[in-house]
Amino acid sequence: MPARILAHRQAVEQQLQRFSLKTEASRYQPLEYQAETIDLPPVHVVDMREELKSGNRSIFSRVLKESIYHVLDNNQQAILFLNRRGTATYIFCRDCGHSLHCPRCDTPLTYHQPAYSPDAQTPSSRIETLTETRQPRPVPLLTCHHCAYQRKMPSKCPQCGSEHIRQYGTGTERVEAELQSLFPQARTLRWDYETTRKKGAHEIIMGHFLAHRADVLIGTQMLAKGLDLPLVTLVGVVLADVGLNLPDFHAAERTFQVLTQVAGRAGRSPLGGKVILQTYQPDHYVIQTAAKHDFFSFYQQELDYRRQIGYPPFSQLVRLEYRHSDPTQAKKAAEDLSRQIQKWLHSEGRKNTHLIGPVPPFYQRLKGYYRWQLILRGPDPRSLLRGRQLRDWRIEINPPNLL
Image 1: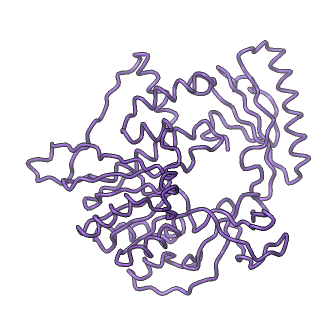
Image 2 (image 1 turned 60 degrees about the vertical axis):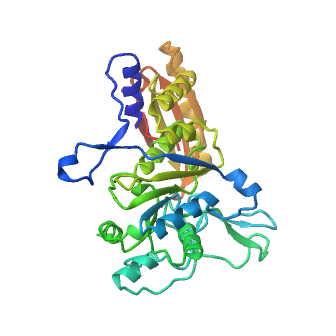
Image 3 (image 1 turned 120 degrees about the vertical axis):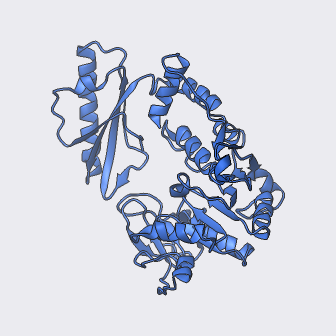
């Protein structure tokens, strides 16, 4: 995706010629009409703050519920997108405030309801029904999505002993459960990491959905692109804000990309379709431009922000990361290298190259190792490190993320 930002900048500067695709080719017309195109689907933005004010506590807005009813009544299909797995995204004690984290990664543990089984051949309960396989239902599990650490859901808070320990947040499993509660007649499939661990699971799920053995497909980013589903007339993005506020300059770009990709799953046939984006930040420029399929406006604003902060494509980055099981040693190594880099910058007179850090990344601890990082930003920061001995340091040129 960073290459697309760079290409757009070159197009703006007339180094490349820019072409815009305003419509999609229809693949479901008779042979003699295959050259016809269809308009991109209309997008409706729902302010979930207003839903809460009106008393709607459901994860589904009123307009999304009505649209699902319409899809089911017309024997069509829908996709519900949420880029989070599990039933709840963190476990929290309401008495002392303690939350359960992975002991190796210090990241919140995700709650998976009993229908989930990491060892089952086909984890989704709906897939089990469709493929006539039966798997034992396990106890609720708390899972780390970085290192796969697992533990049982405790009945009491491990810090204060309170029984007021609950699951909070929303994942694909919760979306499926609430959908089945609201629409018991709906046949659902879930497409996320848990349901696709077995070899061939992707093909099984897609085969069932294409054969219309399910009405609603619920999934994460893996269903956002590459799918041509003629009966899908509705795409609902349950929470469009996911990932938007991560401390990484790619966050807006990635969110815009996935929203526009998943929106393109609707209305890919003469049946037409629509997209509903549920969000708590309806005025954010990513939400507004994605709702209008307005690539040009997004790139203009994103390029302006990148220019202001001096990030790619207006500079190059080098990320240096140090990992150690001892947090003190990890911090010391980062501080020592920081001082050394400052000396190199001064001795070579590199006034346009800047050092950011040392700081711990967003995920400070992963798989038992504490992490510290340094970021070099400038016109050619990699040349500063050429020929230097940097033992035990991980070096990335223009890293895909800074998390």
